[in-house]
Image 1: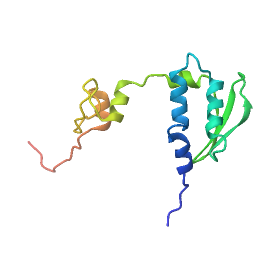
Image 2: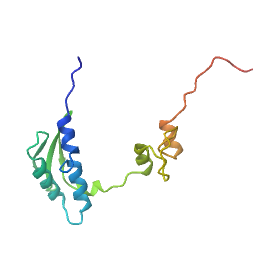
Image 3: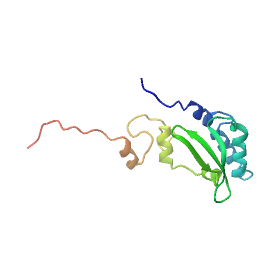
Image 4: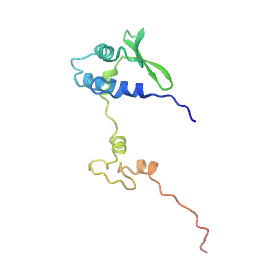
Length: 140
């Protein structure tokens, strides 16, 4: 029997829709011109304040931003809310996104074959190398 930490509560905290932390961050970031990091933490607390994996606490960080704690599989992690919404708006590199989606960049086509996910040769080489076996024969 293998024992493991059941992190389904934490996953639920992140993924619930509406009201999961990811949904709240995305919603708040979408309205970032009207929302603040403080308002985001207030929304977390309103939706998740009683959840066993979320705790508002730690007071303020050095810059005066609210801090909150999420109990992850390896233990509690405390985050500062400083620039949280701004960082959520950062764009991912298209090669990385394509790898996650399994599409060729710019085509929207899922090819599922070797090199699926990126047309960048370097990225393809990282993940989709053919194995080369020595057959034992040699040419003279």
